Amino acid sequence: MKRFVRSTVLVLFGSFCILSVSGCVSALEFTTNPIPIEFTLNSILTLSTDGNISIPNLTPGNSIISSGDYTITVSTNNVAGYVLSATVGCADGDGCFNSNILGDGNSNSFAMVDSTTTLTPGKWGVSFDSNATVSSNFQSLPLYSGTPAVINQTTDAAGTAATGYRGTAETTFRVGAYATDTQVAGTYTNVVNFTAVANIVIVAPGECSSVETCMQTFTADMCEAQASDAPVTLTDARDGNTYTVRYIQGACWMTQNLRLTNTVSSQYSNFSTNPTFNPCVDELTAGNTYDEARCHDSGSTETGVWYNYASASAGTITGDSNSTDATEDICPAGWHLPSYDTTKPAGSINSLLDLPDKDYFSPVTGGFYNGISIGNPGNGYWWSSSVTITATGCYRLGYNGSSLGTGTVSRLGGYYIRCVRQ
Image (cartoon, rainbow, N blue to C red):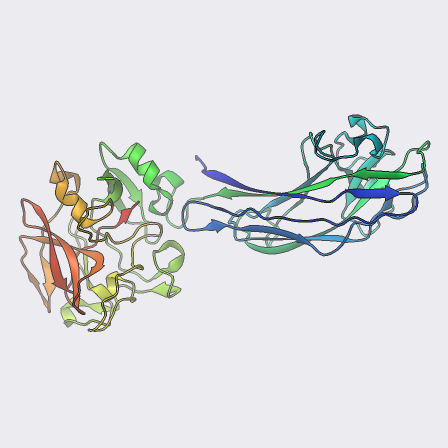
């Protein structure tokens, strides 16, 4: 299965860590670099520390000497967690005092070694063990130009590495050094570089079998590449229903009517006001209402389900004096009700009026629910997200059996839904 990955990299440079036979103190300064990602999440990664690195006196060739406990806190809302790694040193000309690094002054002193290997003299290292005087508890830190040493990878409560992790975690460790037998007394300066990387791994949620066939993870770019000439079939992760979609007039459109009838969560839906929502609290055959979510299932894959506006808007647009456009609805996450805009931008119902062939949209008839019965069965009607200047009206797309058009309707009636992704 193909995976879509985007990385957020946060590089944090410590001020020079001074190692001296008379003791040393170094402070770290941190910056953040949040990067937005596609789909419904933002990857926000922050990193901080609660103290200074301090490596006291050490006797050359005697034993490993480390700093005190050193804690780095990483917070992320990334679905795949993060990996924290570190190196020492920096590129020439970046302010490192490379003439006095710990060891013999060449890169071999900082060669990467396996984490199970005893830390040898002339190396910087990191330990997670409370007994930080034992060299075998340390992992050597590689030179700046080498592959960073992974010093921590987040896990969830069950101990599963990274996958599905979001939140805040602390990593406590000690930075250590081991002097050679012939170490000259003096001050040794270097840079410790911490890097936190959050890899976005979007998995197929719910009832989907893969990213490529899931509505919630099928992007507009994917749609343009795959569905410009012919529709493709996707699965709604919430209930397993499948729909054809096509790239039309600059946006990705469903070319079949929505058939959602069960209670769904906001996790895979285009609403956030409530954690869950039932689009079919009652039947449209029970009569009109501005406030209760009502629907009627035709039982046909072609015709789909009629919804009143309280249902279509996921309960966010109700009452008989509400002139607010719907920003939340019962479309899958990443999708939404089309808008109405006279400038005909992509994703508006107006843009479909310029279709060279109406069959791209695959319009259907079946009428609309008016009160407790079907009206105009030779036509088809679809909700938009745009209300009219009146308190009870909404724009809609219509189909009369031969052509598409727009108009206004009362929010009381029951109409179809076609979702769009841009």
